[in-house]
Length: 195
Image 1 (cartoon, rainbow, N blue to C red):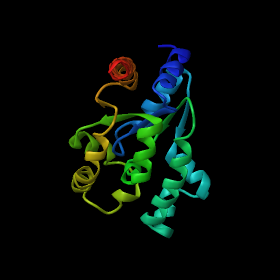
Image 2: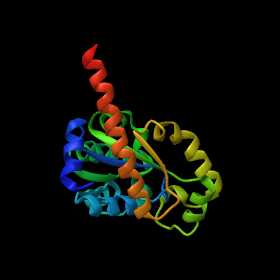
Image 3: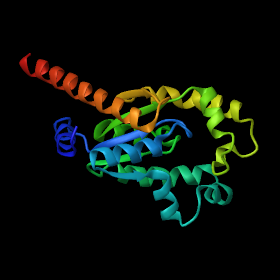
């Protein structure tokens, strides 16, 4: 699917962008970068935008000001990012905890949930030093605990993909599912108009 075709389909769906959500370690940034390159969209990473805004790392923000302060900045920045057109957004794992963000994503974005098994996430996150929620905790327990709180919101996504393959395969899979989602949405829209 070419860039122009993608833009047109997004426009028909009355959506601005594609937002990738899921747990930390699910591969959101790498898939977002790969997809952005493939369809010639810009990639924006919400965590990067937060560090630019705060002029310090997320670890530092958590250390100095705590999670609540971080979530407030995150909400403010992500609500602005969701306004942007023809971009691929990779959002932090906890972004969807905000009702404001969930509502705006539903209205403005096609959401893609990258689903990864908890065992795989644990493996991927074992060596991570940049994630404040994983400091001095049992990673397996923490991942399970986060999943209990967040999964119900992730599952509200327009499209869900098990991210077990290469980023390129995941992108191809998304493009197929996006085309199907677009078609299905248009069929439903046409049915409603005929009623």
